[in-house]
Length: 384
Image 1: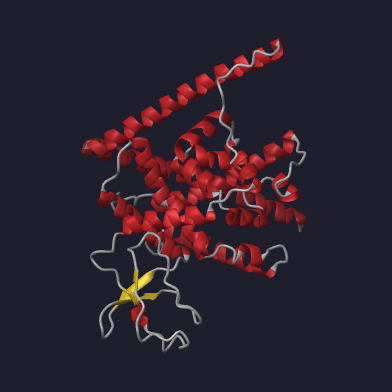
Image 2: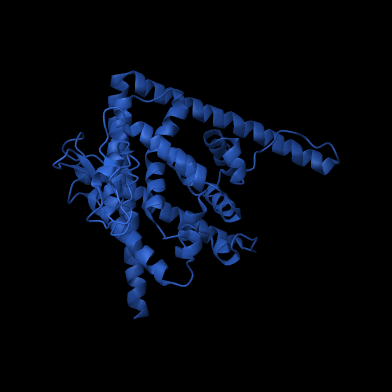
């Protein structure tokens, strides 16, 4: 729920990410690519084809997430899938390679405007995506439950996604020993600029200016003590993660017309448009929902003419029904979340149940993906 309505819908309000999706034709309707956000005439067949392709690609993202979160067959407490050689480990590295290929391809192509959009799938873009899968999920649980999660559980979840982010290529500081004490060195240092890695799910970093630093000195002569290790007063990973998300939201989340078209396309996947729209407004808030073009339904009645009266009455009744089921749905989720957070027995049962659901979902995605691979191989052989 949080991944779709908060992370996916809210995250696609970043125009730079939408530009990458359009350039790679990933989960983007053809009308958005050809029309650039302007209204384009489409047919029911093309709309159905676009929704089917988008659903399949979202399932691919879900399959990667399932492979990272699935438990070991022998011990449900071990994250064997993310260890070297595991399914999640291999899937994450494949995503990293895919990002590198897309980045290189777009930078070489003429259809990518580097001056306007910067480097495609850069560190900031990946940090925003990582926070969408980590902090936004935690925020969604807290919104639904109406109470904060335990700090230990929050830190554990952020630590998990910090490791996944490191596998994806997100720069993470590395604390090592030096002659004059610990310091932080980037895992991917630049030759011209020693920027502090964002490390969104890690501890906060205290940056101090050394009086002996020389801005004209090269990387070898640069004073590494300008970047100090986190101390006991500033190593709050929760505060750092939430603050990083807020910073990205303030300077990157500026939805335009292209974003609104994409959001409308995603909300119409497999029906229930009004239900999905209202749930999204409940979770994202009215301000961002309005910027994303998610129209709020109304229960008002237009009394001007019989045709309009019948139409507005139908819309009003539909609105009341949708509101009722949305509130009932969210109420059931809140009860489930509170019971899981309050009673250890319910929590253990929920963990086992969700573990089984993840395994079944992963097996279903693997079958679907293998079927598509076989079909593509067959078409390739026929063309040859």
